[in-house]
Length: 211
Image 1: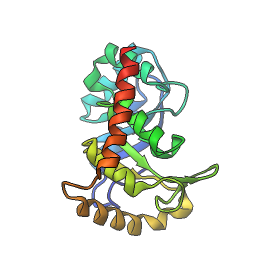
Image 2: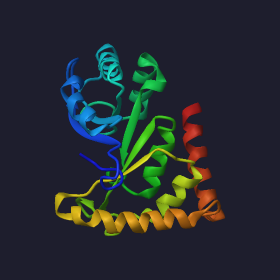
Image 3: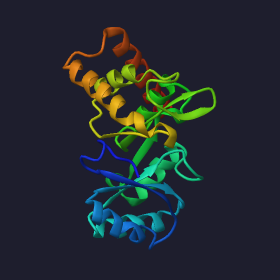
Image 4: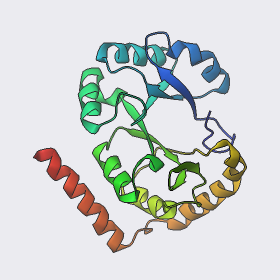
């Protein structure tokens, strides 16, 4: 289970794989108890009909399913996302991205742009070498720069800190620093060089989509 803001309110609950109709219902009592609106799940099926049934099942309880991108065997590419979204209605397919799963910050931004419109949650953890799940200020990814990027891209959905169990005590300090930085950005947090870099990535992605 991931807490968006250290227990002040549980906005989403992270579960395991959803593979068939009935899987979503198993977690509904927990989500209802926690008053959570979103269930983050690993996609265990790429059949559009079954996927639609799972989404219908969750919506009956007022819960929206967000699928983890790049985890498991399905929803591993933007092409597969678009194909399934067209079959189950695009507005019903939401994704969660893990920053540390991409090779670097530029690759994450590219992935975010490729999946623009589907991203409903971003999981923050850092990495060093082959180690994932590190606190955001202990690793190779510059999360303060990423926050500037997300501001330019006008991302206003959920951000979730997602550390290894041994680092759970770091949530409070890191979240306080992150919130202070976000509040300091105001309306002009990104410099022109960063904006031009983002524009180049967007242009590349759009160009490939038209090719």
